Image 1 (cartoon, rainbow, N blue to C red):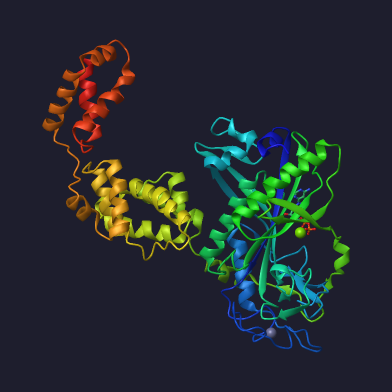
Image 2: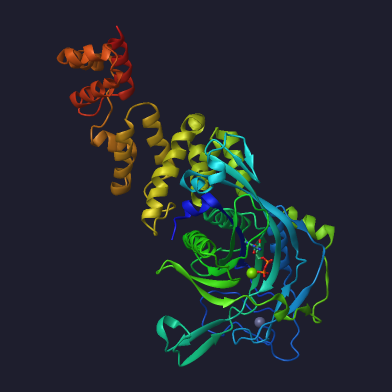
Amino acid sequence: MKTMEEVLRDWEAVIGLEIHCELTELETKMFCGCKLEFGAAPNTHTCPVCLGLPGALPVPNKAAIESIVLAGLATNCDIEKHTLFYRKGYMYPDMAKNFQTTQGPKAFAMRGWLDLDVDGKGAQERLDVRDLEVGARVQSATRTETGYTTHIGITRIHMEEDAGKMIHIGGGEGRIDGATHSLVDYNRAGTPLMELVTEPDLRTPEEARLFMQKLRQVYLSLGISDCSLEEGSMRADGNISLRRRGETELGTRTEMKNINSFKALHDALAYEICRQAEVLEGGGVVVQETRHWDPGAKHTITMRTKETADDYRMFPDPDLAPYDLSDEFIEGVRAKLPELPDQKAARFQRTWGLSAYDARHVIEHRDTAGFFEVAMAQAGADAETLAKPIANLIINDLAARRSADESFDLATCPFTPARAVELAGLRASDAISSKQEKEVLEAVFAEDKDPAVVVEERDMKQVSDAGAIEAVVDAVLAANPDKVAEYRGGKTGLLGFFVGQCMKEMAGQGNPKLINQLLAEKLSV
Ligand code: ADP
Ligand code: MG
Ligand code: ZN
């Protein structure tokens, strides 16, 4: 198969996501009073309604509707006042009712959008944008200094209920193939579920990954779900098709269901781009079907060809009256909107002068955003000076620790906001070099000590005494007359050699800025 980059030179990928999210922070289920609790003993949170017993009547959960309206407002959706629930035919043992109660195309939240900022390596996937000048646009993407921003339409967010959970016994790895029997746990049946559907506006696997990540940040800030990909409370279906560059018609899509990690979403879509290109370039056609991503084998396989919408036999649920949300209700929900991630990033830029890139990455995780705010409060008058170096510590050093160690917990680790202020202060005043800063940080983590104590104990203070440095500079220049002559003859790249010699003389503790300055002065005469 060709690489994704080779494929994307000739083909454009078109991606749309359906992202499911359980409202885990609610007390009770969607249509009954059963408790929502992950990990409870099987079938301990059930009742006639969620077991679908004859004659049981559903009562909608008002708090669930508040949550979805909140989600809609936070993603720039219009709130649809007049909606209703449907019964969608569903015959499988994990849903005892034999239908799922769900909204139709008219949902509580419609026509929203989120803007994505794409930068770093991931921005390279977007071939039509990467060579543009800053400010230039293609489709809904605009080139920026660090990458690009792109506008992603949200078709709707609709409300539905989750099914129960099947456990297959006797087969391999809990799979149904070869199982002797299956068990069903209805605790999850009837859990309120929001499904967000995007327009087919995404163009690369990286954009899809970032969209899901950003939506997770938004939902977390709203406090409506724990958004746990591992426990399955947030999961995505990825729809993807290819078309020749310049073509405007959509190609035939395939769909990958129930993807439960950001990496899997990216990799499954990237694989599917390469696979579809091979089919199309070989003169074949893409079959509209559901495919399963196997992260171990790193490929997708056919699960089933697409059933049509008619198969579901949707009709309005006769047990649930249509909705008429009042303006008062909607405004009441709007008043509960917290500061959203984009607003937080904008405030960090405004208040402490962070760049858009730094602000975005500092707020990427809730704990780092909080860490930064506490550090800024403790920095007092130095806050603006220390904002950038502390942001760097968060974006580079702390992020690296987090990705290297899953159990990393910023709240309990030895590196506190106060220590970040101290370390950044030592570096900003040139008391330590940037190399020493890394060493101190290591020591703070390893020995749980204040940065100033580490510097003291290891006698690390950087030499910033101009007299002492000048003496070393003079000695180095005197010892290398031939190199000095070459430098003056135009080989200015030798500056690094002189800096290195001076550093060696000073056992790495000379202030590099001063050394550079003095060398440049003395070499230019
Ligand atoms: P369904 O309900 O059958 O899954 P939808 O029309 O609701 O189908 O679309 C589901 C998702 O697939 C949406 O995110 C949409 O943007 C996306 N999508 C639809 N057509 C295409 C296509 N040709 N290529 C890529 N994505 C598509
Ligand atoms: Mg679908
Ligand atoms: Zn129940």
